[in-house]
Image (cartoon, rainbow over all chains, first blue to last red; front, side, top):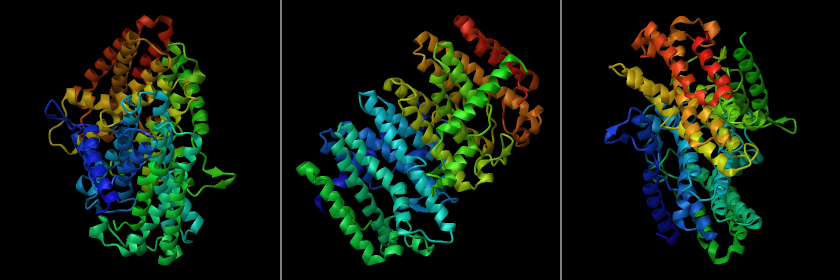
Length: 301
Length: 301
């Protein structure tokens, strides 16, 4: 494993453990709560995963001088938002997926109603974590985190992107490149971008540094999505951990379907180089983020 | 109409208008956004309704000296949470309702995927509104509102209550009175309680006043639910604005099924008196809240 792979794996293990401690418990005084089912489903949906968003938040925070312990709660809150979005995206009325992170999706493991509620409560829980003074002693910093993460998650971000994606499936005309770029920036890019932004907020970065990190995150998010589309064509389900060939099978417009495999690969390479250029002013402090961008380009899962 | 009915109707109209202005727009520069469908569904789901929670927030705030304009955004945020919960509770995999506020439910008017996403984005939007400095200039007050409303909405509150309610339907043994009391305090009571609490937070109420208003809200929430259960038996759909007789038809445990009609009525009366007693220290400033409690007991819809 490369150095960055080891760091990703270490972070994933650390986030897994912290998140388990930060989620509600299904018992009280040793007795199961009447609402235990939804809490167990929340915990189930938060297990596994590459924790890329947490890694971005932690490493951006580190680049701005914020300690790992201090950034961990915000990182976990973002993972709660991500987990909630996966639960809901996988539902029968949405993407209707059976497999996620190598295991049954939440509605398959539990049931649809429980899955919807677990997603709802995970979103709420993210804001509960962020509002808590243990996330940052300054209420204004907490409110900035909440505002940024809510903006990225809502109708103008993640949820809006999912809506466009679903609507595009039944539309007669396919999406154009600008349309799919906007879709992906909203659907997956917004949360990736705000993961970096959260690190910058925690580190009280100045406006120039915030713009710089946003440039990195925007390009990184697109690379991540293009590689996802390539893996959907070229990957195998066991390695990727979810169904592959689905988008192509549905005739769904993706970067790869519009650009072709080679152009998509070229574009991902150019965007990776551009992402790294954005953060050159950070010097050595930006090394991990630069390594991560190269890793995202080369990833097989 | 009684004085309180007029005030409720006036507030509902005011909230309707403010909320319409506070929700995202489905167009940009006159052109519909690609994600317009989910925004239209959010706006649809936020129309109508008695705005009881907004009224409680506004009137509690007023009792603690906070102007109506200042409390309106927090009141609208709570209505967004309430609207999201109704969209999701009405879904086919949950209560499977076709009628809400006298119109088709959101998944009937749009479709299931859009309804789930609209609920998700409305929850997010509530926190966007609360985090904004226009809600209160003090970030610490905003964070307190966010923490309280998130706590009331999550697995330990509203969502947990809905989980228990759904699980109870398929359980062999019916719920006991303490169990159904806990369920209702979570499912509907928590958001009613936090509506009052939000007014107290905005008004920087002292600890004794906060406890007092929480006592009022707790009793009020139970009365509200008992009357809901009575209307399910005795009301008619046209007046109530949603399907009636459903709970009874399903053999679902309610306050009325456990206590019987007369005992339920007696209990609601006692709780109303108790709610009013809680706020006697507020004197004349508590008059509207006291009138509201009497109105909630007597309501026919």
